[in-house]
Image (cartoon, rainbow over all chains, first blue to last red; front, side, top):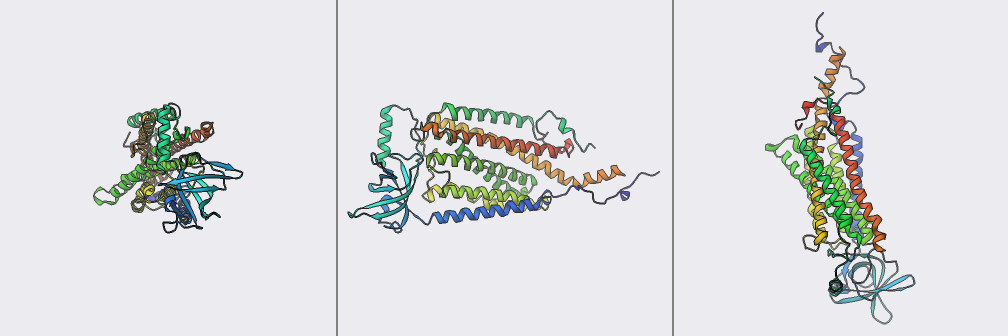
Length: 172
Length: 247
Length: 47
């Protein structure tokens, strides 16, 4: 009896056949992930562009820079003045300053995060003319913009006080 | 030939382990232990952020490692596309590094989101840094999907290398977004020297331990990819051997 | 008080980070073992 040769082999496909290309096993899954990634990427760009419609203005640019006009929905950046925060019912009043220019803010939502005096914030809303001829910012949302400065909590009091004074006097 | 190898009886936890990777793994584990110790217990609270600053020690290193991982993917892809260095090994390093990069980018997004809740008062906002980071994350998820679309190993390597070279261009966009736009996200902390003492040391430990972890993961992952490629290449041999045994 | 309020977010970020890395590692080793079972030892040039 002779040895079986390769020509005698039954090469009919079996239920499980190892493939030379792994990706062919479940390419539909990869296509689905790719479609989802493309969709998510498009959504992110759309969200960003929608959000960017509101001009971003420093307090000192209000009324000076194009887009930072009275009555228009904008976002303003400034530092919360020391001793300026007052709660009056559902609203919170405070003053923000940037590069020596200040504007009072009337915020209709509850401030969250690290909101406090002498901290940089970004407020969404619009500049409104008051009855007495002055202007104020009618804000509907405030987000705290923490700086890249870090300092340990329990430093001696003089250093802390100096730091706070410096932070508040920078005004952005 | 023993096609079902004795690897399962190996004392090593993984067939991709060597003495070097075991030593590297132990070093990474020790580093992470230190990171938890210093990050959560020994470093001081921040004057403004209080305990929230502790997220910095995982958030910043994971972001840096994701950038590094995507950079390595780009370089390896370029090495594959260049005819003089063309080798599937570069493609596997690119794939492994991208996968680990996606892991670190995911960690960056989640830890940043939790930090944002403490600091800004919101988990998420469509600010330039956050949006570009999320976009980078889904781009590399797309890259990993493109790797799995089928075809030969060479086809996979070529199309994913081209995509990697395009995707890596997003990394500077993310990094400099805090300078080019006016985002809510803070600027660089370490570059400006605004962190010192135990806080800086904790961040340094985070960076070292995550780097060790990255190298360890990429070595293992590219070996797993090599094993998978071998399984694919040997698919026909294995099938023929099975048929010979039948007859 | 503020520190206590923030603790869940801080601990959560560490848990998600370390848990995510651990899960990924376990999954990767499982894939390694699965592939290695189908190959002879000499297919591992690193060992």
